[in-house]
Length: 344
Image 1: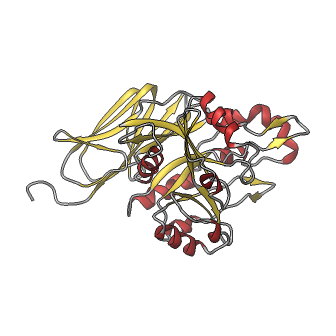
Image 2: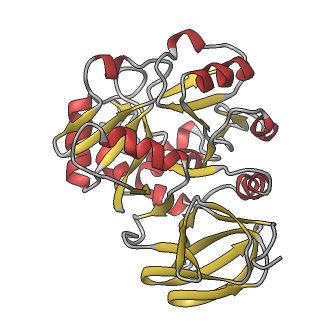
């Protein structure tokens, strides 16, 4: 499998971002990422303008962020029509996206609060509505901007790294509950607009800087360097064959979470019936504080580059890692559902 490293949830001048696609692909190339997923508001015009595909050595995938009635927002991947969905009820949006064969992700499940008000959000109960594929588990801009006030923006531009906290605990807890019932993929998102501040002569998180922060690492089959890689990437993300990493702390390329039983290897996002004791392994490219979780609760920890644990019962298993005490990696789960063991 090819490990494609990139960024999800970007806005360009096709909606309310400050940059052109040419600027963004050049910034992505300088930052050393392989793909980014564009999610301009309520439009797929970049695809019509032939931006989906490889540009400057970077794969551009055109998705969209759909503005639903009330406050909910949905990131759609693989959709063919989003313009007519704007301001429709969430159930209708998800129903129509399912009919298009698109993947629908909960956008910024816990939004930043500015002056005490949420920028935009749905409710955690929205996740219960049929049609969601997964969630933006860690929304980077909403993480670092939470509690920001307009008069503190100048200092924010200098100290935003100190504001990084990780995914919201309630979002993680709700994700763990959802995965008890069904597969539910998690991705990292930037939600970056690179907002221009002419008075200050700067941008809020310029694209190149943002591309070096929170990334999603996707394990793809059949990677070929052709336009078809966009579909392969979306399919792998939909299946949860990916992990989230704050590469600003350390490059997480090569991080792996796998399960093995009788020589058969299971990878992130895979769902299988429980068939007896299974070995779970975490490998890190750098020494870190590693944790293995079952149904949202820690069952094993290790300091170093590897962790191995023999699972004696079914559960939804995933891995986390902290680097120098800071949140670093969150993997998608391996789902070992209760079932009949061999020989029964």
